[in-house]
Length: 293
Length: 81
Image 1 (cartoon, each protein chain N blue to C red):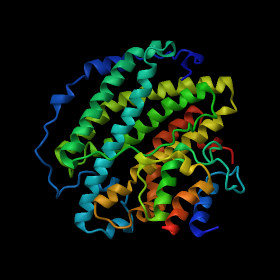
Image 2: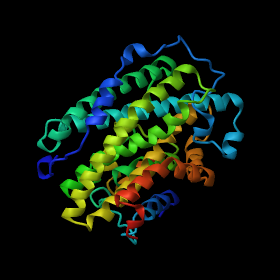
Image 3: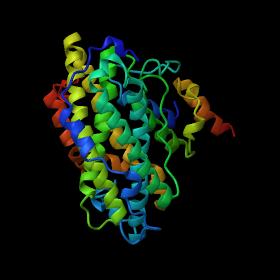
Image 4: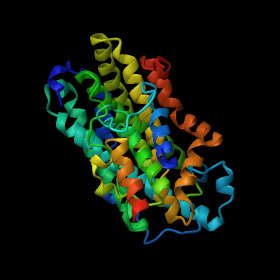
């Protein structure tokens, strides 16, 4: 980490800090955890499953469809847990660095809230799914080694922001889906409520660091745009977990994953999930249109 | 080149316009022909081609470093066994 080479990030976070304080709740007592959840209800909105809208969904038995909503919920919450672990580690390393002295107060709220989210996601997975799915394999080699220190710093916060925005698309929808069991709906609702502040903060940090990248070397902006587009695609791919297909009793999990990811209906669905984030990235000046062929 | 290795090569070239072809001993990781973001997809491709699961916790990076290493680890070993 080369945070000392980055100019201080200065943001007006008074409103977000006040909201974090006034909206504080006890995550350990706020939820009513039932002994078990009905298996005849979808745990995830059916329209948000990775096979939704395709003939692959129609070909499943009703039991397989319901099982898929259960295992994709466990996958979705597991992704949240691993994503939070990653982002908390990064923020923890920076919280008292000079660059972030001006935003340190909010970062304390951020880490605290993220730790609580990780707890309730894990509770759900372990109580009702009996497990978490493991984190995706990753290369130890650094895929951003070609970037300048300030661009690498931008990428750290961009990954956090993109992850939160994608998750929030799902949370916002499921927060009001009356077909879901109450506990599943509540977890999505509470997370959506907190994440709106984190997304607002993430966008401010991103904008500040992107300006620093552009000021240092405008030619690096398209390189960052390419990385971010790849990261968006990578993030969508993580939702399609072959282990969840296998657990739901669906054969040929890897082939199914490959076909589903490339299915035109799903490609359109991915664009919907990413629409808000891509709009923000374009407005910030790092649109995918900048990527050099 | 065998059919599975052809698929491996197509996967990498399809994601890297900077390469026209890949030498068998090119370091795919140092050259960033395969980066962290593509790695998960690459593992799934190898699992599909070999029909064998790959345990993410048992990965040895050197098995993925070159086309020659990939062929030796995932395709020749299987043919010989």
